[in-house]
Image 1: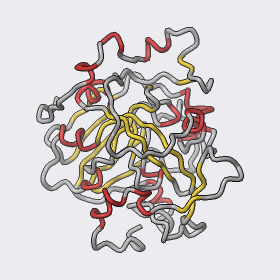
Image 2: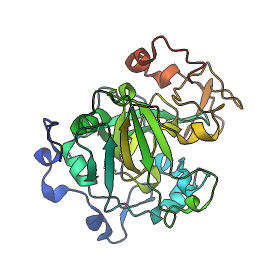
Image 3: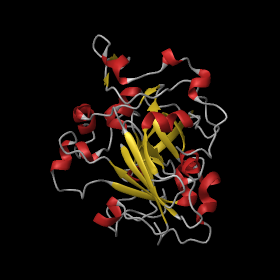
Image 4: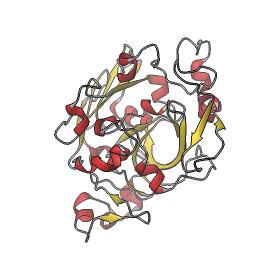
Length: 313
């Protein structure tokens, strides 16, 4: 196990072992865990979600309801409809779960999820997430900075990019039995993007373990990029010196670039991205102007100094 990264505070320092959430405890309940929205909360891998605090990067916007966040999703492994993940993702087994970390790092290996999470300082973060369909919502994620995980495995000096891969399990992820995407789903970031403190690995939301339809048990959140960059149910992370392949860029490179930064000044070839529809605001609510970098420009704009973002989209 890597030993270079030593967080100041671990979950076990602030939460008794008896308070840990795990799949067996949840499944032992009378009918599983059900929140006030009356949506069943699928059990996830054992992770300790205690001791988190509000991030300094959190928006002061009102979060969407738990029902909004868990019933309107893009998770193409379960179908292309926004309600498909909430209908079908309960079939996904998330315990046990491990993540392989390889490539240009000093401590490659396959690590159990609990082992990873135990080393990472959890932090609650509330972000506005947007995707190419021009809808948005505010989600109270619980997670840790991806930088903490990368520092844990120690990238080699030549590493420039981080690649991610989603679980490929067609017997549980029903849409993987079709050919409308080239499975498994893959994504990538430049290393400096991955190391930005806004880039997190989420393991929970609304104070609970991550629901299956939201990318359980561990997913990426990159709030200044369109939603398809935030890959779900991650099983592999690779450090590399070359720009990695990404699913949507390979399918339609004229529509989806590697960077996928929120840029209202550049329209998608088939629709404008200048405004967005806020989920939960009502059918007749006015659309909102889309903000450059999703409103996080003060934290990330410097990453793209000197780049033509109409070409490198």
